[in-house]
Length: 93
Ligand SMILES: NC(=O)c1ccc[n+]([C@@H]2O[C@H](COP(=O)([O-])OP(=O)(O)OC[C@H]3O[C@@H](n4cnc5c(N)ncnc54)[C@H](OP(=O)(O)O)[C@@H]3O)[C@@H](O)[C@H]2O)c1
Image 1 (cartoon, protein in one colour):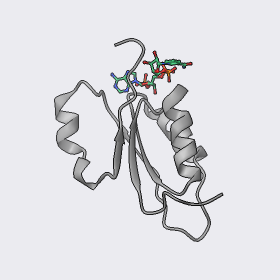
Image 2: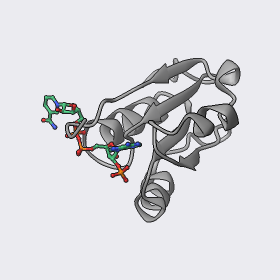
Image 3: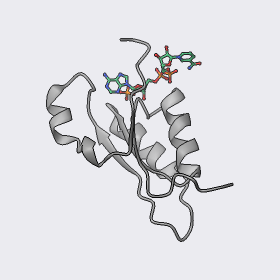
């Protein structure tokens, strides 16, 4: 499989389960470095530890615990360093 997303940094909200988690896995398989965002730290840890890393390539997966509706969260997120932000809406909002 081509590692077409090597060097890309992708931020995914709603990434601790469901569609966001699935997208995170897919993009990590293609070589991207993933930043996961959701409110539940334990679930984020589990997902981050399960993401694939391509041997020999600089690929770092991180997570941010927070609520997308919290304006102060977005002051902390370095969005200009992100290649692609993916905002997965929660089904409850
Ligand atoms: N699953 C499907 O088959 C399907 C099909 C069609 C459309 N959709 C739509 O796709 C979207 C995602 O579906 P899903 O099944 O992946 O949903 P899900 O399983 O409920 O996952 C929602 C994700 O968003 C996070 N989240 C919820 N509220 C948040 C908030 N305020 N701030 C930050 N993170 C938040 C949740 O983690 P925390 O609770 O830890 O924050 C979780 O990671 C929904 O709009 C759904 O209607 C889903």
